[in-house]
Image (cartoon, rainbow, N blue to C red; front, side, top):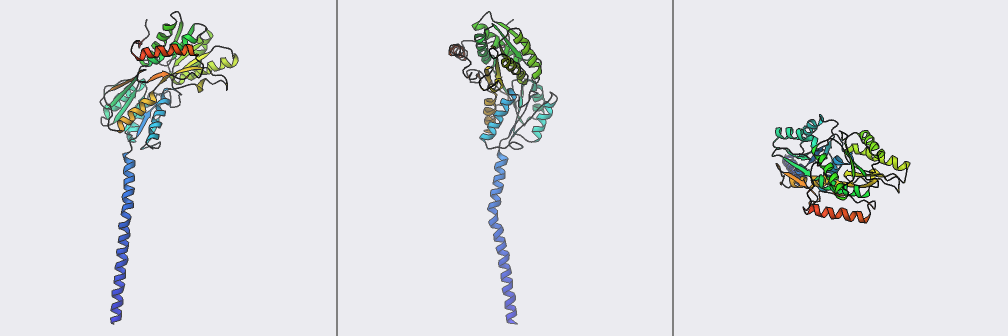
Length: 360
């Protein structure tokens, strides 16, 4: 009987030990769970950024693409992944998509949302007013909301240099400007281009044409065809994806006649690859770079660090390295480049004030 009682007691002790051991195992698991929670918190603490394109699209090889490159660079800098909680974009096919896309990104809880382009101003204004606790950035336009930072560029300053290059490189004395939609930002491109060209050749013949679209390459091609056929030999476009048609027309002419003096000046991003005819021939004279990507990275980091400049307008010009000409890769000779550099320095120092509208 005693032996039986001892056995029961021993069994109880062993059972209790097993239970305590199990509890000890659970307690030892706690640090792992805490680490897991810590990892989740770290992911939650990531500052996410997204953008909505205008109708030009994210692969317009110009304005929207430059902005997207900035968003991607920010994401890479902070080890973020594409998608919710990281970085992303939504593409607009028509202007009716603007508000819808902005609201979709808000529902996905992105910390900072960019509206890319002047045409998105009304949509950003409306959505920002309805969501005062959210942060927005608007490129190329201004709205009066405390939760929106407006980003502008002195396109006229960079375009002035493009005008100098075009006038100096033209053999016919005729150059052209192809714009997208007739809006203030594109007017600044035209005004600077005209002013720069006339600064080095008061008698230069300048043709200007607005296609009315940023996403119609066929219109760009038709317009370029008309200009080149009339004797124009250098065209500067500020037309987003419509400008791709300008390149197409120039390349076709160069293929047909390798000796033809046919050039295109790109816009927003370095469009050298767009002008490639073959391994030895390229019709891109240079490109007027607009630091949209740089501005996006700068503002995203400010917002992440709690320094979001809401309610303010940030303007980037030659002095801020916000606009400039791309490397011509030898297309522009040294003597012409020297003239361009001289004007660049004068504008950056404020010795030359470039108008925002074409002088009538």
